[in-house]
Image (cartoon, rainbow, N blue to C red; front, side):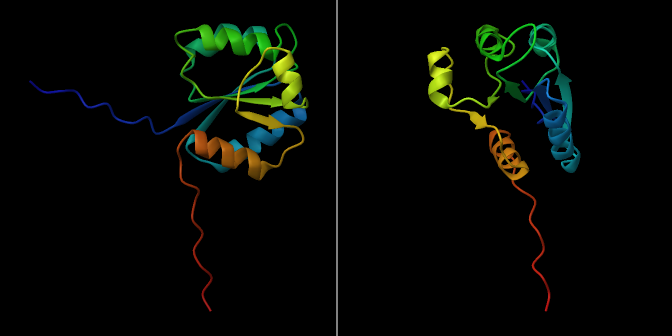
Length: 140
């Protein structure tokens, strides 16, 4: 009996749950630099709650301070949902880790604002298990 082989998904789907236009633009620049990534932006927590289980995300970037449904509540909902509990989540916040613990959010995947494009890209690649592009050594 033949066993079906699952082909690895080549395009990675990134979900950004963020309401700050500057940060959205920064993440879009990062995503555009990586040809095999596709970005879905959700500007508020409620929209993300409704749509995230259906987009097949490989990674979620989640801001804590969101309109309509805050990031801490959305994090808990996503972790409790069968279609999203396995997806890595990077929590983006201006708060310190102890403040998030006080709010009841216990996660080791946190990116504190302000952060650099390089920090974001490194963390995203690590969670998506992708190798960074190698540059050719200079001739001469």
